[in-house]
Length: 435
Image (cartoon, rainbow, N blue to C red; front, side, top):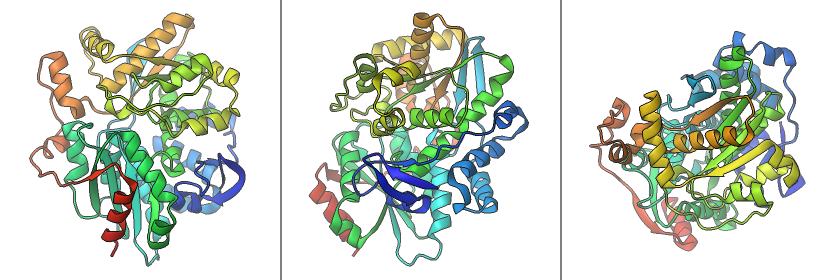
């Protein structure tokens, strides 16, 4: 597999190099140089394949011989060992449940696949690998669970102090061993900026083997494409055009869907659904991209003001606004609308969406009302509602049941190190921890 930088198509690396580098040296993002279209026969016969079969085929098509087929199949079967079911609310609305993994969030798919591939390539290395990851909520928990006790790898998670839910914070701060949590006095964008700067810092890279587990890493992005094929498989018998409504923050999830589409998945349209952090919906409307500091909302995992994967989206479309707006519509919604609709869906369908899934639901309804096109809209439900228990109970005025794997975290002591959003302090911390 050959990959290039979005800032310089002439800069080429293989999959192993992209996996461990995380970011190219020119501060771009790695993209596959060849997005081979899967055979029509594979798409037509998706219903005959298991989720693991689909994931292996997509991964093997992208990665090629760099990981032998037998080893790659083992990686997939260990990483993708939980389902992604589609639940139909009505004839026009489906929910793709992506919260059945260990951390109860969609990011388990990417984090577990990355942990397996890094462990595979890291065999025989003498120097410890340090994974840096910024999280606005769910990424950190998934990465912590995916890499927990992985030999030769330590994980440092940066999260914005006071801006993740209590249960999300417990997922980051209670494991210990090779998992370290840094509580940054700032926003998610500050956390992400610290991670990006670390990868470009000569002193750090001379002393440490650094890599990333954010969706800036291509190994996080590839497995997120798997469940688009799996969702299509489950509803293809309905013979309706498929539209995916994607709650979006850093836009890795939507970019993964675009990759699936380029590989032959027949998707009619994508919807970029955001909260008040509406930089991309505004771009899709105006053609002007104006990143800005993020603001805090109920759907905290989407509180991103400068989404990294926008560069990948632009790369796929050659920065052509007229083309991208034909394939993607963008809608943004307030916390007030989120709360009102969460209650309405619960009452109408007796289905509990989390605050992020509600944004996807709202965006789908607006798209359907605006276009009047016949379609089956599939909303990506990215996290279990219990991860946002305090807000859910306040909005619904009732107790929310907590899955056992979350409930057991409530009484574990939080262990984190508080740091300012300052790179010199962060750099010193990393170097001191390595001495």
